[in-house]
Amino acid sequence: MTAQNQQSHILIADDDPEILQLLEDILSDKGYEISAVRWGKTAYEKLLHEAYDLLLTDLRMPDIDGFELMELVQKHQPDLPVLVITGSTSTRDAVRAIKQGALDFVEKPFDVDAICHTIGKALEVGRLRGESRLLAEELAKPYRFENIVGEDDRMMDIYSLVQDVAGTNTSVLVIGESGTGKELISQAIHYNSPRNRKPLVKVNCVTLSESLLESELFGHEKGSFTGATGMKRGLFEVADGGTLFLDEIGEMSLSTQVKLLQFLQDGTFRRVGGTQDLSVDVRIIAATNRDLKQMVNEGKYREDLYYRLNVFPIQMPPLRARRGDIAKLARYFLQNFGQEMGKRLQGFKPRALRILENHLWPGNVRELENAIERAVVLSKSEWIEEKNLTFLDPGAATLNDSIHTQMMHAEGSLQNQVDAFEKCVLQEILDECKGNRSQAARKLSINRTTLIAKIKKYSLDSTEAKTS
Ligand SMILES: Nc1ncnc2c1ncn2[C@@H]1O[C@H](COP(=O)(O)OP(=O)(O)OP(=O)(O)O)[C@@H](O)[C@H]1O
Ligand SMILES: [Mg+2]
Image (cartoon, rainbow, N blue to C red; front, top):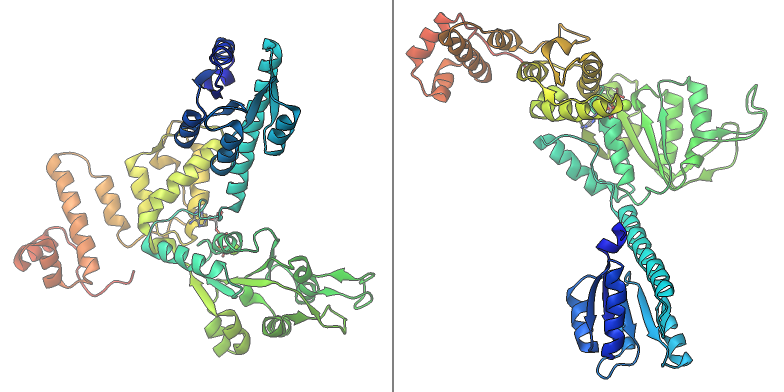
């Protein structure tokens, strides 16, 4: 008995009780699960309400015949393979059955080996049909956001913007500090768009010199400059039908800006050294960590291009503004790197996690990703500990870091630890209320005098507003 036999459920319909019994005996012996019915009507009902792996049916039955059953299968379970029982039926019936979608025959009188062979093949066809349908459904499914971690409200708003804009041809400008996920979001837009079967071409405007960038983007004609020995198609042409991702768009020279502006205005461009206007169907997504508006004010960026690019801005929040996502991202990277390096890791020790959550992350998600990679390399146990965490910029601590660290290192009596906790909570609320003692007291549900006493006791900083 094979594993496949154990799982396969076969419905047999034949009005001849002897044939039915014989088939049931043969196939049960081989380990298949069998439902055997004498009436077409019963088979019809069963097909409507139950899932089978194979239908084995007689063609001529007094009530509902095999042809009607096959029609039902076509409508309700088109993946279900059908085999017909033949012998007394005419060749015409058999041909009609095949035309209607039956896979093959099982001929009377039965030869056990031949039947089993035919049934095995039919089940395999059914399995492949199911797999290819699942694959087709998978391909048709939108890309979604599986590889993007973040449940902060700001990220939720971004997912919704991506969904709104993906299906259009509108240019998108993704703005945010380094490492905030600008490229990741740009990819999500492309892969959620109808252009997702065409290329997503990425160009970083900072890595190429001005002239190289122009010829990379727009191509060049033969002889257009020294070394241009042949015509070269540019990335705009390569991206035809798809998306061009222009990274670090703030670094583009003014002359290249003019050419990009022309494309955004009328969809045309010229190769370097060319005289002919070419047109392609390309969607532009640009990214920057610069303040383009300010660059416009300083005369370093074309105002008209700025407005063309900024039709649909998406602002990526810095990681410090969505602290709730730090632990989720850390666990996600831990799992990825653990798998990559073949290390079995359970998670973070509470103190290590608190350190991660309190770090300022000037390099945003990329910095966190790198920190976790280093921690996974360094870890000797199943848990990431404080000592596995090293920061590239240890000076970049949060305002509350010192107090949190004090809390984390609080040792000794229970009272000591409770005090450390109280101190931490008080400082956080005071910071939140920008030093306003009355407001802080209300939030903490204590009176102002008690708060002042505690501020004194713990030497808390409750002076002017703090920036975050
Ligand atoms: N929300 C997220 N979920 C999972 N991984 C993320 C997320 N945001 C960023 N990353 C990862 O962090 C790294 C940096 O992201 P990305 O390259 O998209 O940032 P960026 O804003 O383009 O950075 P830069 O300005 O430095 O080019 C990548 O490895 C990316 O996969
Ligand atoms: Mg980037």
